[in-house]
Length: 297
Image 1 (spheres, one colour):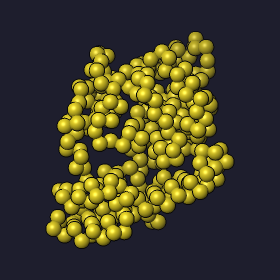
Image 2 (tube, helix red, strand yellow):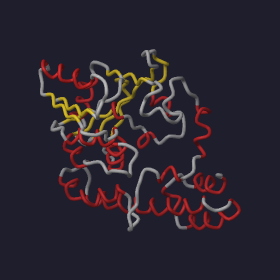
Image 3 (cartoon, one colour):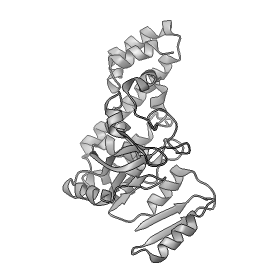
Image 4 (cartoon, one colour):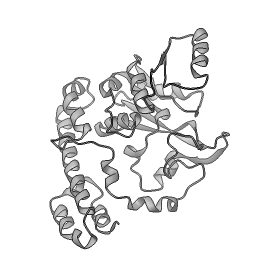
C-alpha cells in the first residue's frame, strides 16, 4: 500500500498522486488536510493510516536505490529483534551531483553518538507492530516524528543501522533539515564541527518536555506501553523498568546541569563537584560534561 497525506500543497502534488493511483498495481490512499499541520504532525497522521507489516517513510526529493526495499526486508526477516532499520545515505547536491561522502562517514569521524543521533526519516523502515505502539507521536515536545520513532527504538535496543548506502540525500536551500552544519552539501572534516563540541546542555533538554513529576515523554510512553512491549517481546519488564529509572536519573541530571550553566562561571564548581559525587554525570559524558559545564559561556 501507498499512503499519501497532502499538507495543503499549492502545486500539482494531489493531481499527480491521483493520476498515479488510477493505474497503480496496489492500494493508494490519498488524504488532504483541511489546514496545514506541518511535516511532523502530517507524518504522524499518515503513519497512523498505514496497515502494513513493514512501513517505509518517504518524503522530500531524495532518490532511493531500486533495491532499497528488498534489501531492508531481507534484514528485517533475518533479524526478528530489529524493530527499526536505517541505512546509510550519500550526500548529493540539488542536481544529484554526488559529493563523495555518506552521512555515516561524516558522523562516525566526529563526536556524534551514531546509535541515537543518526536519524533520517527517508532512510528509515519500521515494523508495523512496533510503529503502532509509538503512535501518535507526542505533540509539541519532540523535534520530529522520525526522531521520536528512533528515540523509542534506540532506547529499547531494537534499532539497527545498515552500513549499505541505499539512497541519495539531496541537499538544497529549501530542505526541512537545512539548518545546522551536519547536512551541508560539501565534504566535511572534524574541524567543521569544532564549535558544536561546546554546545550547552540545554540542547539535551530540547528533545523532551517535562510534566509536574519531572518525567520525560519517553518515560511516560514506556510506563503506558510496558506490558504490551513485553508481550510482543520487544523488551522484558525488568529491562523497561531499568530504562525508566535511567531516564528519570538523566532528566534530574539534565535539570541540574541547566541550573549550573545559568550561574556565573566562578560559581559553578561547587555544584559541579556535588553532581560528580552523586553520579549525575554518569548519564552524560562523565568528566568531559563536567568540564564543559564549568567552562561553557
